[in-house]
Length: 233
Length: 233
DNA sequence: TAAATAGTGTCTCTAAGACATTATTTG
DNA sequence: CAAATAATGTCTTAGAGACACTATTTA
Image 1 (cartoon, chains in turn purple, orange, yellow, brown):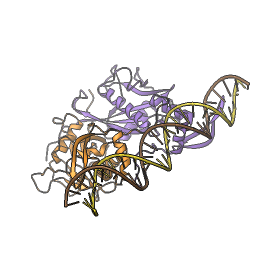
Image 2 (spheres, each protein chain N blue to C red):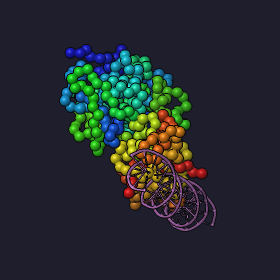
Image 3 (tube, rainbow over the protein chains, first blue to last red):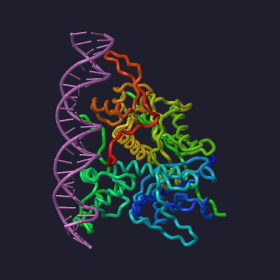
Image 4 (cartoon, chains in turn yellow, blue, purple, green):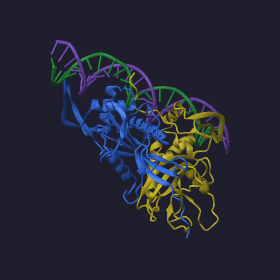
Protein backbone atom coordinates (compact mmCIF):
# COMPACT_ATOMS: atom_id res chain seq x y z
CA UNK A 1 0.00 0.00 0.00
CA UNK A 2 1.48 3.25 -1.13
CA UNK A 3 1.42 6.31 1.04
CA UNK A 4 -1.18 8.91 0.06
CA UNK A 5 0.18 11.96 -1.78
CA UNK A 6 -0.56 15.48 -0.54
CA UNK A 7 -3.61 16.87 -2.32
CA UNK A 8 -3.90 20.39 -3.80
CA UNK A 9 -6.83 22.59 -2.84
CA UNK A 10 -9.77 22.32 -5.27
CA UNK A 11 -11.99 25.31 -5.77
CA UNK A 12 -14.44 26.78 -8.24
CA UNK A 13 -14.71 30.42 -9.25
CA UNK A 14 -17.37 32.18 -11.26
CA UNK A 15 -17.11 35.14 -13.62
CA UNK A 16 -20.71 36.32 -13.72
CA UNK A 17 -21.59 38.87 -16.39
CA UNK A 18 -24.65 41.05 -16.63
CA UNK A 19 -25.85 44.12 -18.48
CA UNK A 20 -27.34 47.11 -16.77
CA UNK A 21 -27.61 50.70 -17.96
CA UNK A 22 -26.08 49.69 -21.26
CA UNK A 23 -22.86 48.58 -19.58
CA UNK A 24 -21.27 45.17 -19.28
CA UNK A 25 -20.77 44.32 -15.62
CA UNK A 26 -19.08 41.59 -13.64
CA UNK A 27 -19.91 40.35 -10.16
CA UNK A 28 -17.16 40.76 -7.55
CA UNK A 29 -16.94 39.82 -3.88
CA UNK A 30 -14.51 40.78 -1.14
CA UNK A 31 -11.46 38.53 -1.12
CA UNK A 32 -11.49 35.98 1.68
CA UNK A 33 -8.07 34.40 2.34
CA UNK A 34 -9.74 31.25 3.71
CA UNK A 35 -13.27 30.15 4.56
CA UNK A 36 -14.33 31.52 7.91
CA UNK A 37 -11.73 34.26 7.90
CA UNK A 38 -12.88 37.87 7.56
CA UNK A 39 -12.90 39.40 4.07
CA UNK A 40 -10.00 41.57 2.94
CA UNK A 41 -10.45 44.92 1.24
CA UNK A 42 -9.48 43.62 -2.18
CA UNK A 43 -12.08 42.49 -4.69
CA UNK A 44 -12.10 38.97 -6.11
CA UNK A 45 -14.16 36.66 -8.27
CA UNK A 46 -16.78 34.87 -6.18
CA UNK A 47 -15.92 31.24 -5.49
CA UNK A 48 -14.95 28.73 -2.90
CA UNK A 49 -13.60 25.30 -2.16
CA UNK A 50 -15.36 22.27 -3.56
CA UNK A 51 -17.47 20.78 -0.78
CA UNK A 52 -17.20 17.06 -1.26
CA UNK A 53 -20.39 16.13 0.59
CA UNK A 54 -22.50 18.89 -0.94
CA UNK A 55 -21.39 19.42 -4.53
CA UNK A 56 -22.03 16.45 -6.78
CA UNK A 57 -19.89 17.87 -9.56
CA UNK A 58 -18.13 21.02 -10.74
CA UNK A 59 -21.13 22.68 -12.41
CA UNK A 60 -23.35 22.25 -9.40
CA UNK A 61 -20.64 23.82 -7.29
CA UNK A 62 -20.62 26.77 -9.70
CA UNK A 63 -24.41 26.94 -9.61
CA UNK A 64 -24.34 27.00 -5.82
CA UNK A 65 -21.96 29.97 -5.87
CA UNK A 66 -24.06 31.93 -8.38
CA UNK A 67 -27.23 31.21 -6.44
CA UNK A 68 -25.67 32.30 -3.14
CA UNK A 69 -24.56 35.67 -4.50
CA UNK A 70 -27.37 36.61 -6.88
CA UNK A 71 -30.33 34.38 -6.06
CA UNK A 72 -30.44 33.35 -9.70
CA UNK A 73 -30.82 29.60 -10.24
CA UNK A 74 -31.08 29.21 -14.00
CA UNK A 75 -28.14 31.23 -15.28
CA UNK A 76 -26.31 30.10 -18.39
CA UNK A 77 -23.04 28.46 -17.30
CA UNK A 78 -20.02 27.62 -19.40
CA UNK A 79 -16.59 26.35 -18.40
CA UNK A 80 -13.85 28.87 -18.97
CA UNK A 81 -10.77 26.92 -17.88
CA UNK A 82 -8.65 25.79 -15.00
CA UNK A 83 -5.94 27.69 -13.18
CA UNK A 84 -3.63 25.73 -10.92
CA UNK A 85 -0.16 26.21 -9.55
CA UNK A 86 1.99 25.86 -6.45
CA UNK A 87 2.11 29.60 -5.88
CA UNK A 88 -1.26 31.14 -6.72
CA UNK A 89 -2.75 30.63 -3.26
CA UNK A 90 -0.77 31.37 -0.09
CA UNK A 91 -2.17 28.20 1.48
CA UNK A 92 -0.34 26.00 -1.03
CA UNK A 93 -0.86 24.20 -4.34
CA UNK A 94 -4.33 25.07 -5.50
CA UNK A 95 -6.40 24.48 -8.62
CA UNK A 96 -9.58 26.31 -9.49
CA UNK A 97 -12.08 25.51 -12.18
CA UNK A 98 -13.58 28.72 -13.52
CA UNK A 99 -17.07 29.10 -14.99
CA UNK A 100 -18.59 31.98 -16.90
CA UNK A 101 -22.18 32.78 -15.88
CA UNK A 102 -24.48 34.98 -17.92
CA UNK A 103 -27.17 36.61 -15.82
CA UNK A 104 -30.29 37.67 -17.65
CA UNK A 105 -31.96 39.70 -14.96
CA UNK A 106 -31.06 43.24 -13.99
CA UNK A 107 -27.88 42.45 -12.08
CA UNK A 108 -29.40 41.24 -8.81
CA UNK A 109 -27.61 40.82 -5.49
CA UNK A 110 -28.40 38.71 -2.44
CA UNK A 111 -27.71 40.91 0.60
CA UNK A 112 -25.60 39.17 3.25
CA UNK A 113 -26.39 39.36 6.94
CA UNK A 114 -23.34 41.26 8.04
CA UNK A 115 -21.19 44.23 7.42
CA UNK A 116 -20.56 45.22 3.82
CA UNK A 117 -20.02 41.63 2.85
CA UNK A 118 -22.27 41.88 -0.21
CA UNK A 119 -21.05 41.16 -3.69
CA UNK A 120 -21.20 44.09 -6.12
CA UNK A 121 -21.50 44.57 -9.85
CA UNK A 122 -18.54 46.37 -11.43
CA UNK A 123 -18.39 47.88 -14.89
CA UNK A 124 -16.06 46.04 -17.27
CA UNK A 125 -13.72 48.42 -19.02
CA UNK A 126 -11.41 47.21 -21.74
CA UNK A 127 -10.36 43.74 -20.53
CA UNK A 128 -10.96 44.07 -16.81
CA UNK A 129 -12.18 46.31 -14.03
CA UNK A 130 -10.37 49.43 -12.93
CA UNK A 131 -8.68 48.17 -9.79
CA UNK A 132 -6.60 45.03 -9.48
CA UNK A 133 -8.14 41.87 -8.11
CA UNK A 134 -6.84 39.34 -5.60
CA UNK A 135 -4.27 36.67 -6.53
CA UNK A 136 -4.55 35.72 -10.23
CA UNK A 137 -8.14 36.90 -10.69
CA UNK A 138 -7.13 39.75 -13.01
CA UNK A 139 -5.74 37.20 -15.43
CA UNK A 140 -8.86 35.08 -15.12
CA UNK A 141 -11.18 38.03 -15.66
CA UNK A 142 -9.23 39.06 -18.75
CA UNK A 143 -9.54 35.55 -20.14
CA UNK A 144 -13.28 35.58 -19.42
CA UNK A 145 -13.84 38.91 -21.15
CA UNK A 146 -11.83 37.72 -24.13
CA UNK A 147 -13.85 34.51 -24.34
CA UNK A 148 -17.15 36.36 -24.03
CA UNK A 149 -16.19 38.93 -26.67
CA UNK A 150 -14.62 36.39 -28.98
CA UNK A 151 -17.49 33.95 -28.87
CA UNK A 152 -20.01 36.75 -29.27
CA UNK A 153 -18.59 37.35 -32.75
CA UNK A 154 -20.05 34.11 -34.02
CA UNK A 155 -22.60 32.77 -31.51
CA UNK A 156 -25.80 33.75 -29.73
CA UNK A 157 -24.05 34.22 -26.36
CA UNK A 158 -25.10 37.85 -25.75
CA UNK A 159 -28.74 36.78 -25.94
CA UNK A 160 -28.25 34.99 -22.61
CA UNK A 161 -27.73 38.38 -21.00
CA UNK A 162 -31.29 39.36 -21.91
CA UNK A 163 -34.64 38.37 -20.37
CA UNK A 164 -36.66 35.62 -22.06
CA UNK A 165 -38.43 37.96 -24.46
CA UNK A 166 -36.67 40.73 -26.30
CA UNK A 167 -36.79 42.78 -29.48
CA UNK A 168 -34.19 42.64 -32.21
CA UNK A 169 -33.17 46.16 -31.27
CA UNK A 170 -32.51 45.05 -27.71
CA UNK A 171 -30.58 42.04 -28.94
CA UNK A 172 -28.42 44.21 -31.16
CA UNK A 173 -27.80 46.55 -28.22
CA UNK A 174 -26.64 43.58 -26.13
CA UNK A 175 -24.17 42.59 -28.83
CA UNK A 176 -22.93 46.16 -29.03
CA UNK A 177 -22.46 46.42 -25.28
CA UNK A 178 -20.53 43.16 -25.15
CA UNK A 179 -18.42 43.81 -28.23
CA UNK A 180 -17.87 47.47 -27.44
CA UNK A 181 -18.70 48.69 -30.91
CA UNK A 182 -21.71 49.57 -33.01
CA UNK A 183 -23.13 47.14 -35.53
CA UNK A 184 -24.93 47.70 -38.79
CA UNK A 185 -28.65 47.06 -38.35
CA UNK A 186 -29.59 45.44 -41.63
CA UNK A 187 -26.70 42.98 -41.67
CA UNK A 188 -27.30 42.12 -38.03
CA UNK A 189 -30.95 41.32 -38.59
CA UNK A 190 -30.52 39.10 -41.61
CA UNK A 191 -27.70 37.26 -39.89
CA UNK A 192 -29.73 36.61 -36.76
CA UNK A 193 -32.89 35.69 -38.65
CA UNK A 194 -31.35 33.40 -41.27
CA UNK A 195 -29.44 31.55 -38.55
CA UNK A 196 -32.82 30.98 -36.87
CA UNK A 197 -31.24 32.04 -33.63
CA UNK A 198 -34.57 33.46 -32.44
CA UNK A 199 -38.24 32.57 -32.75
CA UNK A 200 -40.72 35.38 -33.44
CA UNK A 201 -43.65 35.78 -31.04
CA UNK A 202 -47.02 37.34 -31.73
CA UNK A 203 -46.42 40.03 -29.20
CA UNK A 204 -44.94 43.48 -29.54
CA UNK A 205 -43.05 45.94 -27.39
CA UNK A 206 -45.19 49.11 -27.22
CA UNK A 207 -43.49 52.51 -27.16
CA UNK A 208 -43.72 56.02 -28.53
CA UNK A 209 -42.86 54.67 -31.96
CA UNK A 210 -43.57 51.72 -34.17
CA UNK A 211 -43.93 48.66 -31.91
CA UNK A 212 -41.12 46.13 -32.16
CA UNK A 213 -41.82 42.43 -32.48
CA UNK A 214 -40.77 40.31 -29.54
CA UNK A 215 -38.61 37.23 -29.98
CA UNK A 216 -37.26 34.48 -27.79
CA UNK A 217 -34.23 32.24 -28.18
CA UNK A 218 -34.85 29.18 -30.34
CA UNK A 219 -32.43 27.05 -28.35
CA UNK A 220 -31.37 26.85 -24.74
CA UNK A 221 -27.77 26.42 -25.82
CA UNK A 222 -25.63 28.83 -27.84
CA UNK A 223 -26.10 28.77 -31.60
CA UNK A 224 -23.10 29.09 -33.89
CA UNK A 225 -23.31 31.14 -37.04
CA UNK A 226 -22.21 29.17 -40.10
CA UNK A 227 -18.52 29.32 -40.73
CA UNK A 228 -15.75 28.79 -43.26
CA UNK A 229 -14.31 25.66 -44.86
CA UNK A 230 -17.05 23.91 -46.79
CA UNK A 231 -16.98 20.40 -48.09
CA UNK A 232 -15.97 19.49 -51.58
CA UNK A 233 -19.04 18.72 -53.70
CA UNK B 1 -9.25 28.14 13.56
CA UNK B 2 -11.59 26.23 11.30
CA UNK B 3 -11.15 22.55 10.68
CA UNK B 4 -9.69 21.67 7.28
CA UNK B 5 -12.19 20.38 4.71
CA UNK B 6 -11.62 17.07 2.91
CA UNK B 7 -9.87 17.68 -0.40
CA UNK B 8 -10.81 16.08 -3.73
CA UNK B 9 -8.15 14.31 -5.79
CA UNK B 10 -6.51 16.59 -8.38
CA UNK B 11 -5.24 15.06 -11.57
CA UNK B 12 -4.31 15.98 -15.11
CA UNK B 13 -5.11 13.97 -18.23
CA UNK B 14 -3.86 14.41 -21.76
CA UNK B 15 -5.57 13.69 -25.06
CA UNK B 16 -2.59 13.48 -27.41
CA UNK B 17 -3.37 13.47 -31.12
CA UNK B 18 -1.08 12.50 -33.96
CA UNK B 19 -1.30 11.62 -37.62
CA UNK B 20 0.26 8.56 -39.10
CA UNK B 21 -0.58 6.70 -42.28
CA UNK B 22 -3.19 9.33 -43.07
CA UNK B 23 -5.17 8.53 -39.96
CA UNK B 24 -5.89 10.61 -36.90
CA UNK B 25 -4.65 8.78 -33.83
CA UNK B 26 -4.89 9.24 -30.08
CA UNK B 27 -2.49 8.05 -27.41
CA UNK B 28 -3.91 5.59 -24.88
CA UNK B 29 -2.42 3.88 -21.83
CA UNK B 30 -3.59 0.98 -19.71
CA UNK B 31 -5.94 2.13 -16.95
CA UNK B 32 -4.30 2.21 -13.53
CA UNK B 33 -6.84 2.40 -10.66
CA UNK B 34 -4.25 4.12 -8.44
CA UNK B 35 -0.55 4.97 -8.68
CA UNK B 36 1.58 1.93 -7.89
CA UNK B 37 -1.22 -0.51 -8.58
CA UNK B 38 -0.97 -2.78 -11.61
CA UNK B 39 -2.65 -1.64 -14.82
CA UNK B 40 -6.08 -3.00 -15.75
CA UNK B 41 -6.93 -4.34 -19.18
CA UNK B 42 -9.02 -1.29 -20.10
CA UNK B 43 -7.54 1.62 -22.03
CA UNK B 44 -7.54 5.15 -20.67
CA UNK B 45 -6.21 8.60 -21.42
CA UNK B 46 -2.70 9.02 -20.02
CA UNK B 47 -2.59 11.14 -16.88
CA UNK B 48 -1.94 11.15 -13.19
CA UNK B 49 -2.27 13.00 -9.94
CA UNK B 50 -0.78 16.45 -9.60
CA UNK B 51 2.52 16.11 -7.76
CA UNK B 52 2.70 19.15 -5.54
CA UNK B 53 6.45 19.18 -5.11
CA UNK B 54 7.26 18.45 -8.75
CA UNK B 55 4.68 20.20 -10.91
CA UNK B 56 4.78 23.97 -10.68
CA UNK B 57 1.48 24.37 -12.48
CA UNK B 58 -1.12 22.50 -14.52
CA UNK B 59 0.58 22.86 -17.91
CA UNK B 60 3.90 21.59 -16.66
CA UNK B 61 2.12 18.60 -15.20
CA UNK B 62 0.58 17.97 -18.61
CA UNK B 63 3.99 18.41 -20.25
CA UNK B 64 5.51 15.89 -17.87
CA UNK B 65 2.86 13.33 -18.82
CA UNK B 66 3.35 13.85 -22.57
CA UNK B 67 7.11 13.63 -22.21
CA UNK B 68 6.93 10.45 -20.17
CA UNK B 69 4.81 8.63 -22.74
CA UNK B 70 6.17 9.95 -26.03
CA UNK B 71 9.51 11.57 -25.30
CA UNK B 72 8.25 14.74 -27.00
CA UNK B 73 9.00 17.93 -25.07
CA UNK B 74 7.70 20.70 -27.31
CA UNK B 75 4.20 19.53 -28.20
CA UNK B 76 1.45 22.09 -28.67
CA UNK B 77 -0.74 22.04 -25.56
CA UNK B 78 -4.18 23.52 -25.07
CA UNK B 79 -6.60 23.24 -22.19
CA UNK B 80 -9.70 21.28 -23.03
CA UNK B 81 -11.67 21.50 -19.80
CA UNK B 82 -12.18 20.14 -16.33
CA UNK B 83 -14.13 17.09 -15.27
CA UNK B 84 -14.91 16.70 -11.60
CA UNK B 85 -17.52 14.85 -9.59
CA UNK B 86 -18.08 12.77 -6.50
CA UNK B 87 -18.58 9.59 -8.52
CA UNK B 88 -16.18 9.55 -11.46
CA UNK B 89 -13.30 7.95 -9.56
CA UNK B 90 -13.86 5.00 -7.19
CA UNK B 91 -11.43 6.58 -4.72
CA UNK B 92 -13.79 9.52 -4.12
CA UNK B 93 -14.37 13.10 -5.26
CA UNK B 94 -11.92 13.78 -8.04
CA UNK B 95 -11.27 16.58 -10.50
CA UNK B 96 -9.11 16.33 -13.57
CA UNK B 97 -7.87 19.09 -15.81
CA UNK B 98 -7.62 17.81 -19.37
CA UNK B 99 -5.19 19.06 -22.01
CA UNK B 100 -5.11 18.42 -25.73
CA UNK B 101 -1.62 17.76 -27.10
CA UNK B 102 -0.78 17.84 -30.78
CA UNK B 103 2.24 15.70 -31.63
CA UNK B 104 4.06 16.64 -34.78
CA UNK B 105 6.36 13.67 -35.08
CA UNK B 106 5.38 10.27 -36.39
CA UNK B 107 3.47 9.06 -33.32
CA UNK B 108 6.41 8.09 -31.11
CA UNK B 109 6.26 5.96 -27.97
CA UNK B 110 8.58 5.69 -25.00
CA UNK B 111 8.86 1.96 -24.20
CA UNK B 112 8.42 1.18 -20.51
CA UNK B 113 10.63 -1.24 -18.62
CA UNK B 114 8.03 -3.85 -17.89
CA UNK B 115 5.39 -6.02 -19.35
CA UNK B 116 3.10 -4.54 -21.97
CA UNK B 117 2.86 -1.31 -20.04
CA UNK B 118 3.53 0.86 -23.08
CA UNK B 119 1.12 3.45 -24.31
CA UNK B 120 -0.25 2.88 -27.81
CA UNK B 121 -1.63 4.98 -30.63
CA UNK B 122 -5.23 4.16 -31.53
CA UNK B 123 -7.07 5.26 -34.66
CA UNK B 124 -9.85 7.78 -34.01
CA UNK B 125 -13.06 6.76 -35.69
CA UNK B 126 -16.08 9.04 -35.67
CA UNK B 127 -15.93 10.64 -32.22
CA UNK B 128 -13.87 8.12 -30.31
CA UNK B 129 -12.02 4.84 -30.48
CA UNK B 130 -13.69 1.50 -31.05
CA UNK B 131 -13.66 0.11 -27.54
CA UNK B 132 -14.85 1.90 -24.42
CA UNK B 133 -12.38 3.63 -22.16
CA UNK B 134 -12.07 3.68 -18.37
CA UNK B 135 -14.31 5.83 -16.16
CA UNK B 136 -15.46 8.97 -18.02
CA UNK B 137 -12.66 8.99 -20.57
CA UNK B 138 -14.99 8.21 -23.47
CA UNK B 139 -16.83 11.44 -22.78
CA UNK B 140 -13.55 13.33 -22.51
CA UNK B 141 -12.19 11.88 -25.74
CA UNK B 142 -15.41 12.78 -27.54
CA UNK B 143 -15.12 16.35 -26.29
CA UNK B 144 -11.50 16.49 -27.41
CA UNK B 145 -12.28 15.24 -30.91
CA UNK B 146 -15.12 17.71 -31.19
CA UNK B 147 -12.88 20.56 -30.09
CA UNK B 148 -10.11 19.56 -32.48
CA UNK B 149 -12.50 19.20 -35.42
CA UNK B 150 -14.46 22.31 -34.58
CA UNK B 151 -11.44 24.54 -34.13
CA UNK B 152 -9.81 23.13 -37.25
CA UNK B 153 -12.63 24.71 -39.26
CA UNK B 154 -11.36 28.18 -38.58
CA UNK B 155 -7.81 27.98 -37.18
CA UNK B 156 -4.37 26.64 -38.02
CA UNK B 157 -4.59 23.80 -35.47
CA UNK B 158 -3.99 20.89 -37.87
CA UNK B 159 -0.63 22.42 -38.81
CA UNK B 160 0.62 21.51 -35.34
CA UNK B 161 0.26 17.86 -36.29
CA UNK B 162 2.91 18.31 -39.00
CA UNK B 163 6.70 18.61 -38.79
CA UNK B 164 8.25 22.09 -38.93
CA UNK B 165 8.42 22.21 -42.70
CA UNK B 166 5.63 21.04 -44.95
CA UNK B 167 4.06 21.59 -48.33
CA UNK B 168 0.61 23.05 -48.86
CA UNK B 169 -0.47 19.65 -50.12
CA UNK B 170 0.62 18.04 -46.86
CA UNK B 171 -1.13 20.76 -44.89
CA UNK B 172 -4.35 20.23 -46.80
CA UNK B 173 -4.06 16.48 -46.18
CA UNK B 174 -3.70 17.14 -42.44
CA UNK B 175 -6.89 19.22 -42.48
CA UNK B 176 -8.66 16.48 -44.40
CA UNK B 177 -7.55 13.77 -42.00
CA UNK B 178 -8.69 15.78 -39.00
CA UNK B 179 -11.97 16.95 -40.49
CA UNK B 180 -12.74 13.63 -42.12
CA UNK B 181 -13.68 15.11 -45.46
CA UNK B 182 -12.02 16.32 -48.63
CA UNK B 183 -11.41 19.99 -49.25
CA UNK B 184 -11.28 22.01 -52.43
CA UNK B 185 -7.67 22.79 -53.32
CA UNK B 186 -7.94 26.29 -54.73
CA UNK B 187 -10.11 27.68 -51.94
CA UNK B 188 -7.90 26.05 -49.33
CA UNK B 189 -4.74 27.60 -50.72
CA UNK B 190 -6.02 31.15 -51.02
CA UNK B 191 -7.48 30.96 -47.56
CA UNK B 192 -4.26 29.74 -45.99
CA UNK B 193 -2.09 32.18 -47.93
CA UNK B 194 -4.17 35.31 -47.47
CA UNK B 195 -4.44 34.60 -43.73
CA UNK B 196 -0.61 34.50 -43.72
CA UNK B 197 -0.84 31.35 -41.68
CA UNK B 198 2.39 30.07 -43.24
CA UNK B 199 5.67 31.56 -44.41
CA UNK B 200 7.12 30.32 -47.70
CA UNK B 201 10.68 28.96 -47.67
CA UNK B 202 13.12 28.82 -50.54
CA UNK B 203 13.22 25.06 -50.40
CA UNK B 204 11.19 22.49 -52.26
CA UNK B 205 10.01 18.93 -51.69
CA UNK B 206 11.45 16.82 -54.55
CA UNK B 207 9.40 13.97 -55.99
CA UNK B 208 8.44 12.30 -59.21
CA UNK B 209 6.48 15.40 -60.19
CA UNK B 210 6.69 19.15 -59.96
CA UNK B 211 8.46 20.00 -56.69
CA UNK B 212 6.27 21.54 -54.03
CA UNK B 213 7.35 24.63 -52.13
CA UNK B 214 8.00 24.13 -48.44
CA UNK B 215 6.38 26.35 -45.83
CA UNK B 216 6.56 26.74 -42.09
CA UNK B 217 4.07 28.15 -39.60
CA UNK B 218 4.21 31.94 -39.25
CA UNK B 219 3.22 31.83 -35.60
CA UNK B 220 3.81 29.44 -32.72
CA UNK B 221 0.21 29.87 -31.62
CA UNK B 222 -2.93 29.03 -33.57
CA UNK B 223 -4.10 31.61 -36.12
CA UNK B 224 -7.79 32.34 -36.55
CA UNK B 225 -9.23 32.92 -39.98
CA UNK B 226 -11.19 36.15 -40.25
CA UNK B 227 -14.94 35.77 -40.49
CA UNK B 228 -17.94 37.30 -38.80
CA UNK B 229 -19.53 40.50 -37.55
CA UNK B 230 -17.67 43.49 -38.92
CA UNK B 231 -17.72 46.95 -37.44
CA UNK B 232 -19.95 49.70 -38.66
CA UNK B 233 -17.99 52.18 -40.78
C1' DT C 1 6.20 10.79 -74.32
C1' DA C 2 2.86 9.71 -69.95
C1' DA C 3 2.03 10.13 -65.16
C1' DA C 4 1.69 12.71 -61.27
C1' DT C 5 1.19 16.42 -58.42
C1' DA C 6 1.92 21.75 -58.00
C1' DG C 7 -0.05 25.82 -58.75
C1' DT C 8 -3.31 29.44 -61.13
C1' DG C 9 -7.46 31.60 -63.32
C1' DT C 10 -12.34 32.27 -64.00
C1' DC C 11 -16.96 32.18 -62.97
C1' DT C 12 -20.65 31.86 -59.63
C1' DC C 13 -22.84 32.27 -55.32
C1' DT C 14 -23.61 33.81 -50.76
C1' DA C 15 -23.47 36.74 -46.95
C1' DA C 16 -22.06 40.94 -45.07
C1' DG C 17 -21.40 46.19 -45.27
C1' DA C 18 -23.23 50.72 -46.67
C1' DC C 19 -26.95 53.34 -46.91
C1' DA C 20 -31.41 54.86 -48.32
C1' DT C 21 -36.30 54.22 -47.95
C1' DT C 22 -40.67 52.88 -46.14
C1' DA C 23 -43.67 51.63 -41.95
C1' DT C 24 -46.04 52.46 -37.68
C1' DT C 25 -46.66 54.10 -33.45
C1' DT C 26 -47.20 58.34 -29.68
C1' DG C 27 -47.56 63.14 -28.40
C1' DC D 1 -48.05 67.18 -38.11
C1' DA D 2 -42.96 65.84 -35.97
C1' DA D 3 -40.23 62.57 -33.62
C1' DA D 4 -38.66 58.20 -32.94
C1' DT D 5 -37.61 53.68 -33.77
C1' DA D 6 -38.97 49.32 -36.64
C1' DA D 7 -38.33 46.97 -40.69
C1' DT D 8 -37.05 46.41 -45.57
C1' DG D 9 -34.69 47.02 -50.16
C1' DT D 10 -30.79 47.85 -53.22
C1' DC D 11 -26.18 48.03 -54.50
C1' DT D 12 -21.50 46.68 -53.70
C1' DT D 13 -17.81 43.84 -52.12
C1' DA D 14 -15.12 39.90 -50.15
C1' DG D 15 -14.38 35.30 -49.84
C1' DA D 16 -15.59 30.53 -50.75
C1' DG D 17 -16.90 26.71 -53.99
C1' DA D 18 -16.65 24.55 -58.60
C1' DC D 19 -13.87 23.39 -62.05
C1' DA D 20 -10.84 23.84 -65.75
C1' DC D 21 -6.50 24.99 -67.03
C1' DT D 22 -1.30 25.52 -67.03
C1' DA D 23 3.43 24.26 -64.91
C1' DT D 24 7.20 21.30 -63.72
C1' DT D 25 9.26 17.45 -62.40
C1' DT D 26 10.58 11.95 -63.00
C1' DA D 27 10.41 7.59 -65.33
